[in-house]
Image 1 (tube, rainbow, N blue to C red):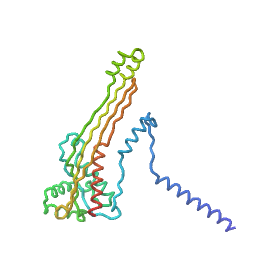
Image 2: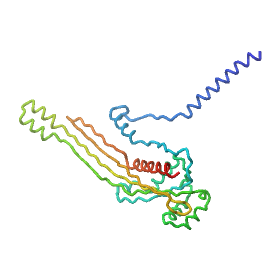
Image 3: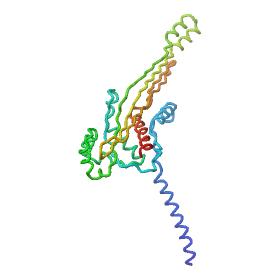
Length: 272
C-alpha cells in the first residue's frame, strides 16, 4: 500500500516541477505591447515602422566584453559646435549618460555620476584644468579610490554640409496639352497638371572626440575622433488629388548615441 501511494505522489511532484518551469519561462519572457494606432497594419504604418526599425537602438557586440575593464568615471564633455539646432537639443550630461550606458555594456566598471553628488563638479574642474593636486585629493573619497580612468566625450562638429531639393510641377505642361490636344488632350492635360512631386534631402556631419585621462595624474591615456554622416529626407507626391508623403531619417539623439557606441568600441578593443 505504501508503494502504491508513493508512485502517484512521485508523478505529482514531477508535474509540479514542470508547471513551475513553465511559469518561470513566462516570467522571464520579453514584454509585448499592442498598437492602438488607427492606421496599424496599413501600408503607411508598415513603411513608417520599417523606417523607425532602421533607426532603432541596437546593442553593439564589444569584442573584449568578456574582459573586465578598469574602474572609471564619465564626466560631462564639451559641445564646441556653434550650430543652434544641436546646442538647443543637447547638454553635455546627455552625452555622458550615453557614455555610461555603453561603457557598462562593454564591461567597464562605471561609477555613475548620480552617485557622486557635488563631487562631480570638483572632479570635472580638476581634470579639465589638469590640476593634479586637486584630482588626487578628490580621488581619495570613498569609492573613487579605485577609479583608474576619467573619460569624457566632446562634440567638435555638428553641421549640415549639403542639401538637395528637386521636384516636378505638371501644371504648365498640362495646360499646354489641354490647349492643343482636343478632348483627349484636355483629359490628359488635367491628369498631367495634377501631378506634383517634391523631394528634399539634407546631410549632416557630426564629429565626436573621446578622451581618457589617468585618474591619479590627470595625464591623457588616449584619445580618438569619430565622425558619422546623418541624412534626413522628405518626399511628397500628388496625382489627381491623391497624395503620398514621407519624411524621416536618423535623429540627432540617435546619431550621438551611435557616435558614443563607435567610440566605446574603439576604447574596448584598444585600451582594455
